[in-house]
Length: 240
Ligand code: ZN
Image 1 (cartoon, helix red, strand yellow):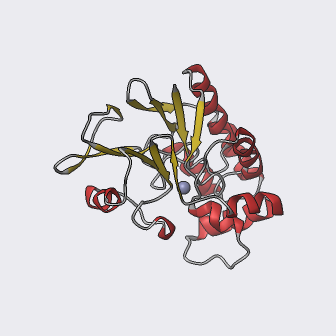
Image 2 (cartoon, helix red, strand yellow):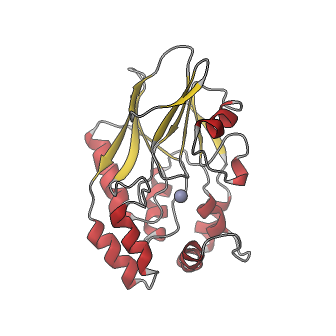
């Protein structure tokens, strides 16, 4: 049994379709979404419809939350704000209800999923180093937790200490815990423009983060055609 674990799609339909095809090619039978389905890119409605129709477990991201509300957009950078106002206008009430009612943390089989952190999931803090990871590990009651939010794939391991690995592939060992950022489908920020997601092979207790080229030109053209900030199209190409 293999899970495809994906998130931070951010309305990038070309990247999402590429990831789902690759997951099927790699014999993934189960799918899990770790949030931020919408925001930034040009196909929020289409990406949300795909995830809803998959009926897979999903947790809420900060952009999902902002898109689901009617409250004024505060504390966001101008690019995110413009994109979210546009995104809200693309979604109907039923879509927004779905986003609003997603949970912050879920357990799926024997692992946990969260968008940002386990210590304060609704505060949308960023885990960018082993000290942040340590705080999250204190609230992790399964051996493995998958998360996103930073748009940077990373595997943290807790044994006697907490360490960030260089590798993006790992075999789980008894007695250790793992906090795994699966990277971003639709807007990677680790300097690699390719879509990112994880394949979890349950029988072999193995996780691999995969990177995939997708039709970035089409995704960029749609952003410009929608009147969204051109910088959102440009950043896709540099993975920032
Ligand atoms: Zn995100």
